[in-house]
Image (cartoon, rainbow, N blue to C red; front, side, top):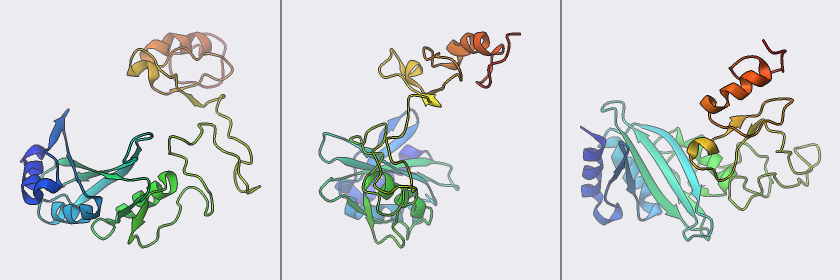
Length: 224
């Protein structure tokens, strides 16, 4: 059975709670209208539809829009080999969604990371604490209003006490650009100011000219 067929079955079970399935590039998405009922949908998807693995949970900051946040759940079934994506919105005022750790144990660290980076809490989580930043850190680094260079820390000797330097790489992107290739991150070539090319096929000659070879960056060798 294809993922779109499974999505239609899930839609038929929950009616207006779910949007019509959207298929794009062989990926199928359903939107859950009420985030509080998300565990109900997830439990049915696992038990009755074979989505026994939670691949990931990610979050989106819709900065400037309301609701501000979107949670995205990526499901997979080892029996039918199908993927399904569930999305649900969370308001900035509430900034909370129910946990799904009781359905998939893998949700534990995914939810902790979202709490740490985006500030969305998960009600009922067994151990909701930061997983990357230290306890007491007052910011959420993946929100779009968080500066790219970071913020000064009030805790000396714990982390950065001044904005983290970004200009020196190691990965650099260029805003804008004519297409996604020109915007993708690339490795900065050490000891050079070469920042002009992103795509590997386009920068191959630049790397060769600087390094004497056509593969990844490293110490600048004499040209061969």
